[in-house]
Amino acid sequence: MQASAKSRAADTGAIDAVIVGAGFAGMYMLHRLRGLGLSVRVYEAAGDVGGTWWWNRYPGARCDVESMQYSYAFSDALQQAWRWSERFSAQPEILRYAAHVADKLDLRRDISFETRVTTAHFDEASDRWLIETDRGDRVAARWCIMATGCLSAARTPDFPGLADFGGTTYHTGQWPHEGVDFSGQRVAVIGTGSSGIQAIPVIAEQAAHLTVFQRTPNYSIPSRNGPMDDAYENSWKRDYPAYRAQARRMRTGILYGLDALYGVNDQSALEVSPEERQRLYTTRWAAGGVAFMAAFNDLIVSQEANDTAAEFVRAQIRATVHDPRVAELLAPRDYPIGTKRICVDTNYFETFNRANVTLVDVRTTPIESITAMGVRVGGVDHAVDSIVFATGFDAMTGALNNIDIRGRAARTLVDKWTEGPRTYLGLMAAGFPNLFMITGPGSPSVLSNMIVSIEQHVDWLADCIGHARARGATAVEATQAAEDGWVALVDEVGHRTLYPKANSWYMGANIPGKARVFMPYIGGVGTYREICDDVAAKGYEGLRFSAARATGSAAAE
Image (cartoon, rainbow, N blue to C red):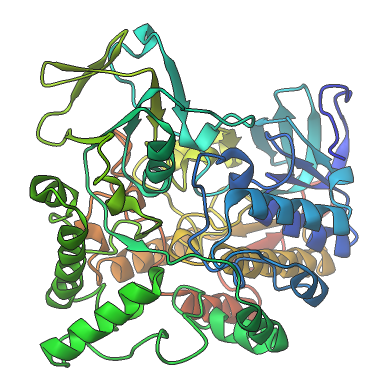
C-alpha cells in the first residue's frame, strides 16, 4: 500500500542519502544503499512507484525493448518468478511489475510519494545537501542521487490561443489515470514521435474522426507483437546469466534474438549484393522491433549505407499506405534513419488508410493557433472536441533543471549547463560534490536498454559511495579536467556518427533556446561499462575525495 504524503509531517534532520525519483533507477538505488547500511529517503512526485510508466498511460503505451530483457537482472528470484504476457509489454503490465518489485523488497516504507523536490543546495561547511520539497520537507543528506529520468519533463508548445480552446486537452506524458474514452469525438493528435505513433492507431479505433498534425515524419518499424511464447520465455530463464552478460557487452544493451538470424550483423550494408541487402532488410522487417537497425554494422556511421535502410523503410510505407500523397508525407527524407529515436509500432502506417483519419502537414504550413473550436492551419480551422499533445519532453536535462540545484559557491546547475550539459561519465558534475545522476547526459542512457544502463550506474555509484566511506571521505567530486575530457570525448564520438544530422531531442532541438549538443554517449553500453570499470579500478580516477572542514583536511585525489 502506498504511503500518503498528504498526512505526513515535514521531515527535518540529517540522513545519509536522498534519492529523487522512484522509477526503476530510484528503486534499485534504494535497495543498494540499504545494503550498505545507509539511512535513505526517496522523494517521488507520482502517487506510487514506476517512474515514466506511472505517468505515461496514454492509449497504446508500450515498451520497445522485449519483455524478457526489460526487467531487473540483479535478482534471479525476481526474473525467474515474474511472467510477462506479451513479447513487448504494455504500460499497465510494466507498472504492475514495478509494484511487484516494490512489494518484494519492501521499498515503499522509505519513499515519500506525491512529493516533489524543489531545491537542493550544497553546504560546503558540512559536505551535505540541503533539500526541500513542495510539502515542506527539509532534510540534510550526505549523498544526493538524481533518479529523475531522461524523459520525464513533459513539454507542451506554447501555441497562441491554447487557453481559449473549449474542448479538453491531454499530454501523452501526463495522461489521466482513469483513462479517456474518445468514442464519438473529433480528436486532434499533435506530434508523431514515439508516443504519437503508439497512441494514434488506438485513438483512431475509438474516435469519430482523428486528425493527425505532423511536423516531422518518423521512421517506424512494426513490432510484430504477440503473446509471450512459452518456449521463448523458458529459453531465457534457463540461461538468464549468460544472456544478461552478453547483453551488457552489446552497443545498446539489448540482445537481438537468441540466434544469428536476428542478431547483430557485422557486415557493411555496402559489401553485400543489392539482392542480399533486400533479403536481410525484409527478414528484419518481418521479424519486427528495433533489431532492424542491427541489420548491418555501418547504418549509423555511413550515409551511403544508411540511405539503403531508409529507402527500404520508405518503400514499405508506400506499399502500406493507399493514398500516394499521404504515403509521401509519412516518409521521412531529411534525416538519416535511426538518428531520431527509431519507433516501434502496431499498425501505425495502416491507420492512415482508415476513412476517419486525416493527416495534416504542419511543416510547410505550421499551426497558426489553437482556437475555441480546434486547430487553425493555413487559415483552415479543424474543429475538434479534444486535443492530444504528443509533443515529447525536455529530454535528459529538463527534469534536473526544473529543480533549483546549487553546488559550490551557490552556482546553479542551470547556469553550468547553459551551453549544454557537462558531466563526468554522465554521473557527476564538477563543482557539485556528492551529487550523482543515474543515466545522466553523457552516458548511453536513452540509446540503450534503460534498465541495463540503470543497473550499471546504480552498482557503480553504490561501490563509489562505499569506497568513499571506507576511506573516511565526506565528499566526492569530479575534477574539472576529468569533466572536460569526458565532454570532449562524448562530442567527438557523437560526431563520428550520423546522429548530429538530425534535429532531434538527442540534440535538444525540440526545445526553443536549448543548446544544440549531442547529449548521450554513443560509444556503446559495453565500451562505456569498460571505461567506468577502469575508472574504478584506478581508484576512481577523475574524482576527488575529501573530508568536511569540521572533520579534517582534504584528502588527496
